[in-house]
Length: 292
Image (tube, rainbow, N blue to C red; front, side, top):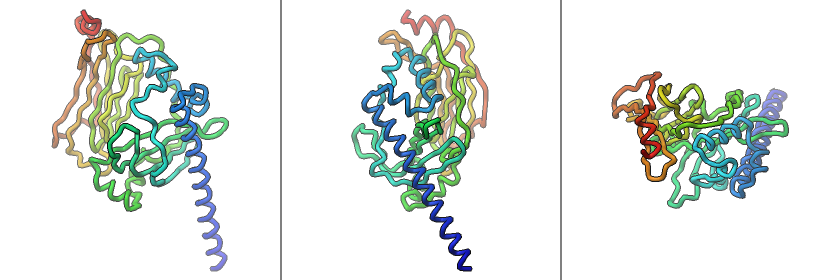
């Protein structure tokens, strides 16, 4: 019995040590990435960012018809510091890892931040962990989850696959070259996860969010395909209102965006689990985008 107790004690100590080592490695990588962004250091950013993410960022910038690499550092808010946040967990699976934090995630935009969830994702490179992305989960619509996390209950993390590494490194996307029309996909989805794909090129994931993202490759003349899937997240009611839109943006000053596509449901309505639709960029639409 004493031998068994000793074995279990050693196993627990080893697990805790591995967790601490993983946490330290991930936080070192994130700190280096954050510093590169703040200092606008392109060389450092290139060294600590995952390859597929570097190509994706470049695609997004070119798809907005902006200069690369200068626009890499034009962020709407500063990358948040981990100082003051409560560390929840760090998990590793194959060449992927994630670390989760709870607290007042501060993007430096003023006001008083509320308690929310920040999940950092990483992939393993030749010299160690590389930064991939950060998911900010606004818990305003999930007060029960916010209360649980504040009390140290990690039930939400255990039930939400997106907070855990899946062992799969995303493939490096095809590099974008020329873009005809700048497009943005906007999603409002409290309590839900929405995945959108446009023209089989640009993939987007929104979780409990109200966000807009540039469409890689933009829109083209004629038909444009949009695919979407919708599912309820833990803590959601499944009755929340929801919106998916695609806007076309002009590069001509003063020309307002054109709403090219919309799928919207009111509170209490049941959304489609998945669907494929099309919208058309006509000659009339093209003329409006060109300010004619």
